[in-house]
Image (cartoon, rainbow, N blue to C red; front, side, top):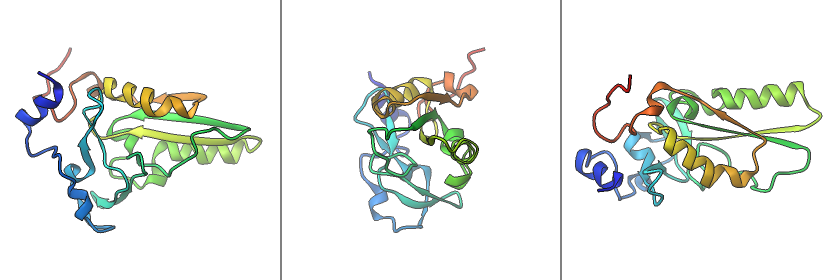
Length: 173
């Protein structure tokens, strides 16, 4: 009995194998269901859909080719660059805020302004509902190949729970 099977049994309407986002026009209103798809990686369970350009809770959400709310950046780190990767859930993702107002994007701007002797890059690998296991798998598979110099973990108490789409929440304390 896998977690993917649990998703299908407990929440058949939440995650679909179909690609409803492909029928969405740029800027069209989208639900959380429109943003995600099942992952081929059983440790991640679901991922953001690649190449989205939708309006999610009154905010424009765009994803890159890999399905992250980021611009596509070169995997090979340019010389004189310090790369910071952020992992987390909806808070790190920037739920309800424009991408330029996420705290990792603000940090990148501040660092590039105050320490211009090097180039600072941030890359956010986060999705609503991700728990710690999913965040670490995203870091392992997608983040580490980018050769980060620093990793920022945006901890939220529900990181210790099952992902939001599986069963009822239960307090661990």
